[in-house]
Length: 274
Length: 274
DNA sequence: GGAGCGCTGTATCGTATGTTACGTATTTTG
DNA sequence: CAAAATACGTAACATACGATACAGCGCTCC
Image (tube, rainbow over all chains, first blue to last red; front, top):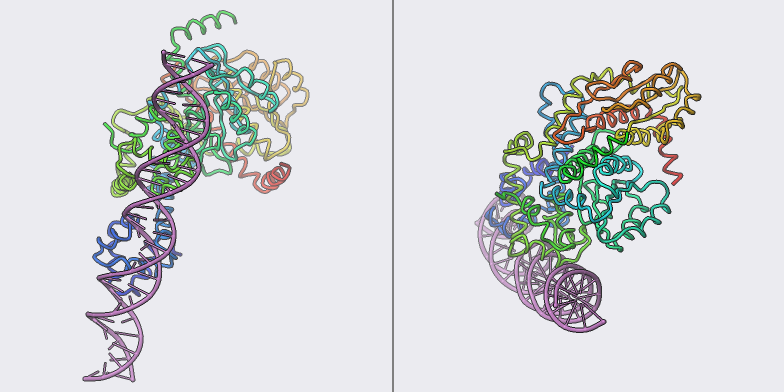
């Protein structure tokens, strides 16, 4: 079975005329980068004419050059998006038994790799801003994450609300929301219409939206001021929210640090109330 | 020092207008593939207009779109030619970007090191046992974990109940619990008396208790049939529940696999009900 | 409440790109 | 050795792509 263009070429290079073979060799030599450039550059690198390149890709079975390029890109994307394959292939050191764990760890590293300290700091600053209220809400499976975050934030600052229950209940809270307020939304596949509708309404009111979503981005990203895209792929029937969970914990920690002075006092008071 | 376009974006995303930020987020989410496609495709994916994309790349310092694409390609080429860099980056990116992340990853590895496959399989089998009911409950900060697990388990099997609300409400449910039933409890420092009391009563009725706790073990461990001890130490004012979260997800996956036949049917039915 | 500024999308334009037609060179075959 | 078929490049073409000008809109700041 042929699963990559490189294999496809190796398979058919024998039946090609001389010039096309040179094209093939050039592509393989710096696979697949040259194939992503223009026909002119490709032909120049191979030392042949443009039509030869086009005949070459046609012989590989592609209708036109863009289709060939898309194919290469898809291949690349598959390689890049699953570092797990690469990390697992040279089998895990020490015999870490659980592929689930390995995938989760990879997800977290990937998620944080796309997440700069500055972004996190910005979001933390926004959440720590005491001038406005903070609302949190989540989808079917992610609502617990919203609760988790709310449970912590509510301790270090006032005016933190988790929106639970029915959709109509949230809508009634919209009236309390304004420009200085922050709405934290958790939404991963399959994205919920109800959340999208709610986000849109909140956005119209000028509420700042912080969105936790997966790598394919919930449509709510349209309205969000800050977007956190977590990796969710694991060898399971379900998507994993673990990476988002860790980001949430990181943010909780950062906000706590910012509110240290006031927060510490609050916490002490709360302890006293027990 | 800025060595990749991703960092460049992270650096400047704060100074960008809303639409360009959407472009940035879209690119980062599926980095860097979208940037290799045409302006039209990029703009469509980001939900903005073409000129916005062009202004976005201009703001990053590129003269034109092709130059931006070449830059991305060069970056990709460098990554592909030395996969070693990619594998080495996560462990030690110079000064470990996020100590929080590092600590969390360590916690997970440690947690799973003390957790045998057999233990996990046993617990999964117990949870998949359809003869009894499943109850889940958690403490102040861990209740969301119980909810998360309940949300998933409830889909693949009937008779899954999350115990919420006030203590007196749980107590009333004790009457429904018997020897064939399982009670999943989440309890980390500072351990809650209410949970301990509840666990004891359930234990007296012969309920099988599965306990998620921290490395110092909640006193509930006395009554538990299975104990999962997760590492919780992180450089933050709060303890981390991330390791327990991952164990929970692992169990959810394992139970799902065991109930595949019945579970799949249930899931399909549920989808149909939407 | 009004004036100014900045952001964003629509419509248009020029051009670089992929594509095709055709003529010449090279090889193959009877 | 002649004749045909195939291979290859040059040059002209059409399309789709990136770039730009402009107008509408919302926001901020007097």
